[in-house]
Amino acid sequence: MPSQDQVPAGSPAGTAADGTYLRGRMCDVLDFAVRHIPRLHSYEKHWRGKQDPVVSMNDKIVVEAALLALTCHRVSHAEPRIAAAVHALAEVLLPHARSARNAEMLARLPQSAASIGTSHLLLDRIGYPDARYDALHTAAIAATHPCLPERLPYRYMEQQWLASLAPGGTGSYGVEAPPGSVLYANQTAVEMHPNDVYSLTHAVMFGTDFGRRTVDPRVSTEAVLATLDSCLALQLGNENLDLIGELLFSAAMLRPGTTCAYTRAGWDLLTGVWERFGYLPSPQFSTPEYEELAFGARAAYSFQHTYHTMFVAGILCAVLYDALDTPPRPHAHAAPDDVAADAALALAAREYQLDVLTRQLGQLTAAGGPLTPTAEAATRYLKLQRAALRGVPSRPAPQAR
Image 1 (cartoon, rainbow, N blue to C red):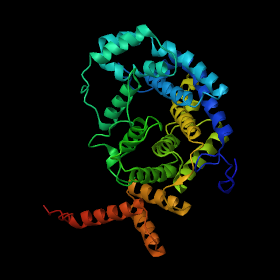
Image 2 (tube, helix red, strand yellow):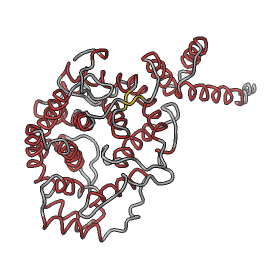
Image 3 (tube, rainbow, N blue to C red):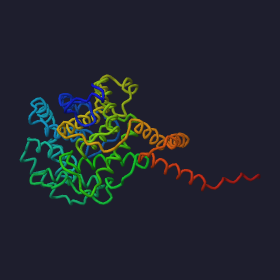
Image 4 (spheres, rainbow, N blue to C red):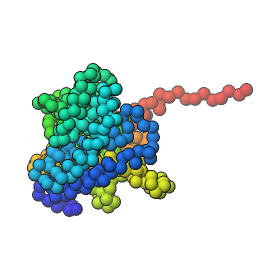
């Protein structure tokens, strides 16, 4: 790929990729899904970890593959190759999304319409209707109280988004961001738990209809973009490709054309690994663990620990492709050195390395200039630790017996 100072015309903001590159990558991910979805039933005996009795690992994968199909479908109308790949994926998803088991679950547990019923709804939206199954899905939704089960704010946003996709669903903007949403938090990676980052990326996904609508106008786009930058810096330090992809597509969905040093660094790392290895591993992928497995279990393990990162990358490419004609819109005046410094600070805070944090902040202060939001948060965090240590009473000496 070309260097950042040689970005070709028509590139998505902050990347060195043109439409041809993004089309190729989307088709690669769609083909990856088409190859593996028919094997899910043979893979499931190798899934590790406790399985949810309602939403199995296979159900989760099918819903995520349907999300990939939806985002790629939206940019496929003038692209026969993408359209064909989306069609192939839809065909292999249909038996899973509308299985007899899922129909039984919708009748027995109507609240499952918000989980296993999602794949049916998404396939309907991309042109694969099923009147009988839709009647069952609609009846299940009608039988479920919208407040049950009680949901976190981003899950509440998901329900609004799904309702907007249903026949007759409308919305002048994405969905409402309820009080308590992480979208209002204006925090950095220093203060956030990993679950908060997950909530943030999913709130953006649902709140913008994957970049097709503007977010709730009460949300500060600039503040959320600053939070995404800080989280990107931490994940660049961790080399967590899964979260890097989600943070990148969140920035692109929130404001198409967004570019800065953080998103460029994330894109370069993600595509660099992709081009080198041909796939994108999750943080849980372990080569030694893979090599210890029997031959028949290796394919299931490999798919389990690559599918989500690959699907995320495919969605990212679709969102960037959808915004190819959007003029670049820088939102931060950060330099690559700021990204590296933020990564070091966020990692030091996360690993509670106060000596590293002190040294890094000392170097930034000596250099002068404004501090990034992450550096400011790290400064507050370090002051809190010092105050806490001063407030800890000394341990009394043991008494002689």
